[in-house]
Length: 177
Image (tube, rainbow, N blue to C red; front, side, top):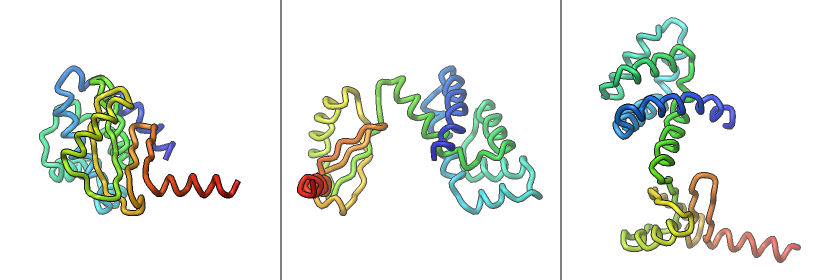
């Protein structure tokens, strides 16, 4: 996966530099749509066919994404297709969003919970997490019943794990030592 991140980084940085001159949010939405299309296995198989041209793949992707692309995004998409980097497109888009969020002083927070979190509870948790991580966070909550209870929060490369599963693992290690 590190190789994919290495490939994606220069694309994301170049995209972000150009997007800053335009509307970063609109570009992010267009890139999200392209990323969703690029993740489709049938499209990737179509794109890998040597008999299919760059223009054909480009036409299919733009039609499926249902987005009007700025000329710079059109050039970017063509470059990605020509260089056979469709598999890296989701990583490029992810890194683009990280750059955009960092510029705004915001970070994505992936919250894993054993049970559904009510909006009022989420607001309380977000207040504590923003204080803990020192920045505004955009929460994305996922259910993960294997945690048994509590939550696990991932912000960038930082992890805060207060789940019962993690506590049991720590007890297991302590008792085995």
